[in-house]
Length: 231
Image 1 (cartoon, rainbow, N blue to C red):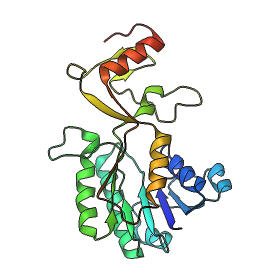
Image 2: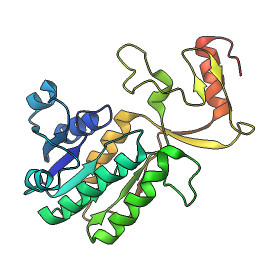
Image 3: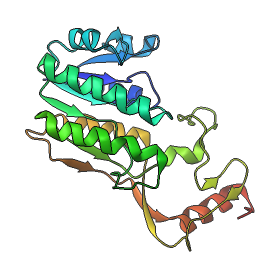
Image 4: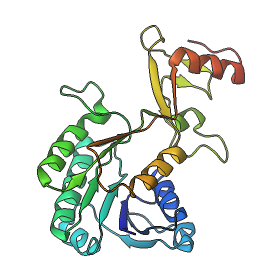
């Protein structure tokens, strides 16, 4: 059993990671968040601390006794996202944390990264390597749940129209649409992350794939469900 801190643990992905870890009945979980606690997580046995991701001292105090930190924080402001995670990483190292997983959850960023939302990952990943902590980068491809944003009861993510807008029946397919892409649901990601806690040693990357499909194939499924699309 390890004591795990899930940072951003009240968010769309973070809360599911917390639930998946607690469901194993093998580990205890501390939720760190800027927002209010979720009663459902507290009922399941999660501990909760409100933190400021830029406050090094408070993070060090909150992480005392924690073995593993899993970050699921996100911000459209890339400078803020990088700054918050670097402060978290430094606090984790000072608090004696053994394992650290930065908020990756997509694909590994590359030099001269064309995707703006991925650029902060390069800075954070480099700092994690230098920290001396055991670490891994969780890679899952595209969140499958983006295609059901807004659907009552299942639209877990904030609305983000990505390539195929199922709600409005429109699509902008990159290239010829034939390249395969990895898609994974939030619940499957959470289950995978929870299972990784039992590994004796984390590899540098932990990759998961719910399904591999081309965007043309995804569009065909969406058309069948919703009717004619306008591409």
